Length: 240
Image 1 (cartoon, rainbow, N blue to C red):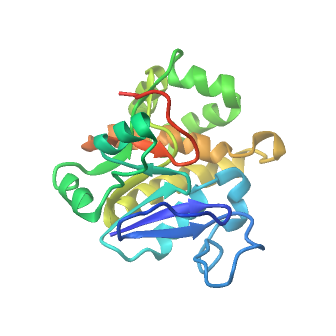
Image 2: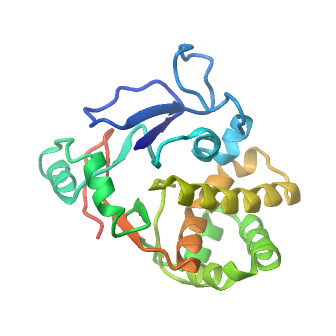
Image 3: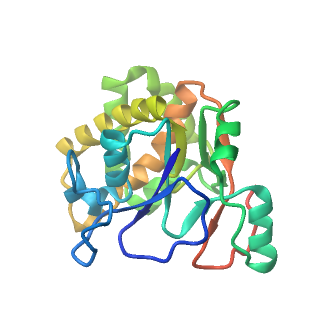
C-alpha cells in the first residue's frame, strides 16, 4: 500500500503508520533533491495552479506501482471514527488509517473517500456560485457528448445536495488507473475548450471533487466515506 501525502511545501509529518509517502507538487524550488516530486517522468506538474492535487494524482497514475494506492493532503488525513472523536475532544492526532484497516475495508468497498458534506443549495448551484458557470456547463456538455453513459449520474450529482470534497481517495491500483483515465480525458478536453487564467485558478481541482462522485455513482461502486482530520487546526464539529 502507498498513500501519497500531497504537499506544495515542506511540512512536518504527524506520527503516521507505515505506507505513507510525501509527494510534492507545484512550486518546488525550495525542496531538497531527494524529495519525491510530481515533475519527474510523465507529468503535468506545470498545470498545478489549475489542477491542484490532481497533478499529484496524475503522477501516481503514471508512476505508482503498489497494489493499493491513494492520496491525502499534508494537513488532512483519513482517520477512524475514534481518531476523529479524539481530535474533537482533546485535539489528539491519532487513528490514521493503517494498511490493515485499508485492506479490510477494500474487501467490502471499492473506494475509500472523504466523508459526506451537505450543501444548502444543489451541488451544481453551489459550484456556480463559488466558481462560475462556464466550466461546469462545458464539463456537462463534454460528458454528454464523449461519455454519455455518465451523463445521468452527472445530472443526479449536480441536482443533489451531498458531496465528498478534497479529492482524497484510496483504491486498488487498477481501479484508480481507470478513474484517472476517465477523469483526465474530461479535464484535458475542457482545457482545450476554455482559457485557464488567474481568474479561474484551481478550477480543475474543484471540478474533480464533483466528478469523483459522478464516476462512483455511474459505475455503481461501493464507496466507504471516511472521516478526516486537519492537523493544522482543532475540528469544531463532527460531520456525519
